[in-house]
Length: 303
Image 1 (tube, one colour):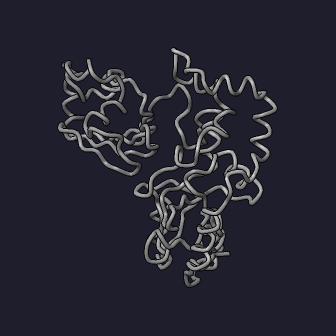
Image 2 (cartoon, rainbow, N blue to C red):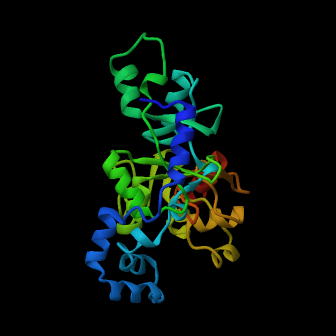
Image 3 (cartoon, rainbow, N blue to C red):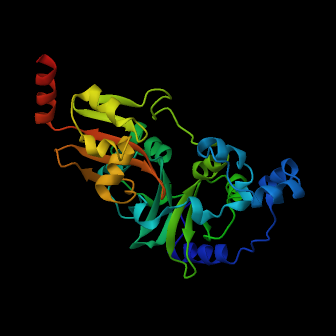
């Protein structure tokens, strides 16, 4: 079950002492089997294909297991959605609901003192389906966390996750403090591309209307198509020369890659909530359109 903060600190220090030559492991050996040494070395020195994008990434798939480090895929500390050990039941429900996560790190005092992880399934089985009326206690539900240094190859961490049956790891710095977080999905996506679950938008459906005036949209949604669908102008002609997608518009509004959970206001009254992002790009957004903009759009259609 849950580890004490002292235990977590020891585990963190142990992770730092992990020798990078711990062995390339199952995934490393698999990569070597597919890419012989001479071919692999040649690819390491080769420049990406000019076409770039998903095609170039696919070429490098298995090679990323030993080429990329945990720090390349982990989300930074400021983006981690975590809960304190003394959180109440209703507050925990709210965090699960608002974040859409099924696993949450748990800390005592600060995130630099993690004590474990709580799984939505454990919480639902104990307090959601058959635990009504019981006094809420988070500690018995805690599961241990993995700890990894930023320099660990993602293939090594993937093997550790597989062998220890854990899907989440905290990235710790040289002092044992929390530096970021990586999930098994983050690692596998570096090999096979983006993974979408049942709650993600289906391929080909770039946006869905959750309720009037509120849309769940992929960041790659063409801006002009979305404006045509909603009847709301989000960018003028000059902006459209600079950005083509909703994600590009959000980047232009902030001047940087926004963090997961951040709400970006639009000068026209709309709001963009970042649902999914990594340190390099935005993936999914929730777009809330102002009522007056919806009325204006409807009036324009009637004219």
